Amino acid sequence: MATMKLILTQDVSGLGAPGDVVEVAPGYGRNYLVPQGLAILATRGAEKQIATIRRAREVREVRDLGHAKEIQGQLAGLQVRLPARSGDGGRLFGSITSADVVAAVQKAGGPKLDRRLITLKNPIKSLGSHTVLVKVHPEVEATVTLEVVAA
Image 1 (cartoon, rainbow, N blue to C red):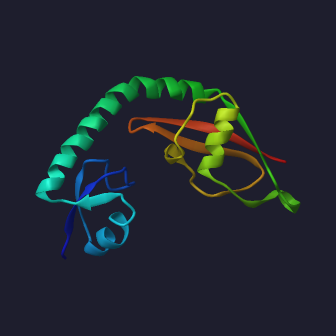
Image 2: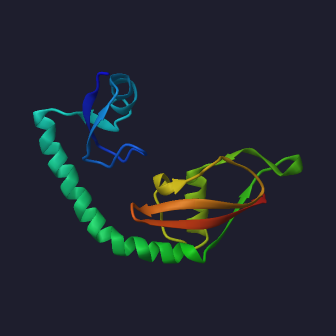
């Protein structure tokens, strides 16, 4: 089966981190990764970009590992309440997004997070208590208990 080589410019779940050279199916690369800006074609000129991306990532990771543990500690005891409009039976109008979770964590006194760090296993569409995974660093994960209440 034919494959194409790409250089990831952003973190892609199940594939790799920025700066990684990956081989993927041509359709996946042409139709999804490249148009979404998640990857570029692996050429000689792009190798310079790889070096720049990797250097930036290494500097960020060295700085982030200690900072990530600090953020994990801040998130550990945090009680986050998120008011949302709901109908009969506790079902929400729409669903809670990762951006909503980030705003609620900040409002509760937690650290400023990037919405891409939030992992929702299933869409949050009901009132009640939900557990949200925050992947602060490739080696550090934190869980936040989110209490969705009627607005």
